[in-house]
Length: 326
Image (cartoon, rainbow, N blue to C red; front, side):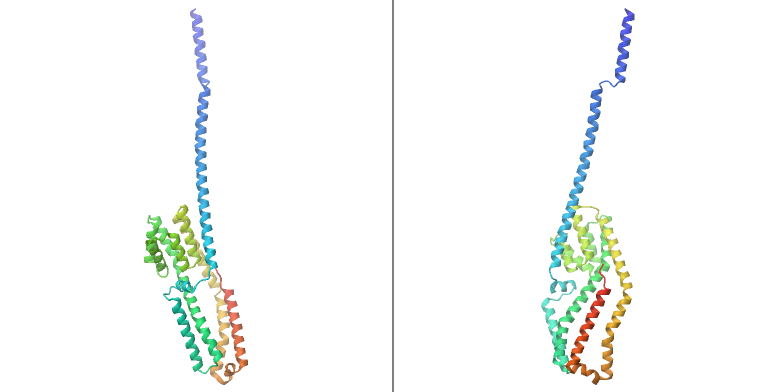
């Protein structure tokens, strides 16, 4: 009897040990493990899906912002630049009425001067109209281009101020105020107008749009796009603006390189364009009677008009050939 009891106990012990080593209640353990791994996988999948949703939403916001900016630019390009806008872009405090009055006075002065000097009425009238209409416009365009060139040269340095300020923890508005105070004209005054607009409640995209109307440069357009996208979608502003300054400086280097390479062609065009008037002036000084026929006779006047037309056409073509837009 004792032997049988010992055998039964031994059998039960061996069976229990085997059952333990075999995994016990395997279904429950495996089910628990599967559930744990499945829950972890679901959580990771949800995180990936949420990250993809955030990325897709951000991409959509960027695309919508770019479409809005592109639409605004198309509308602005369709509009003709008014005289008031041209005066603002030149940084002048003139009014359109004052500009037209000054043009009229200049034209009348040239006309009266030519009549007093004894020039034919048609020539005097043509010179007066040309001086009254063409000369002020040319001066205004020259001032606009010179101001835009100065702005482009200093604009990258102004963006560097924002990059360093944002990296050091300063808010964007304070960086803009530093640019308005420290940067030379015309960058400083333009940013001062932007800061003043924000003070009275104008939002940043609207203020940048007005700034672009006063200074229609591609560099400022890039800056507007970067700040507008950053405001709507977020991101590293310092890194984006730092990349923008790299691009702007590369464009500047390319522009200067092209200017150096085209300097010979520009000098040649200036010499070729100035030779005919220079020779005519020398002949008029040495033998006035010989050159006076060009002004008094009808054939001479027609020849002068034709020569001036073809000279102007040649100078225009040469200027277009040696000017490059980057």
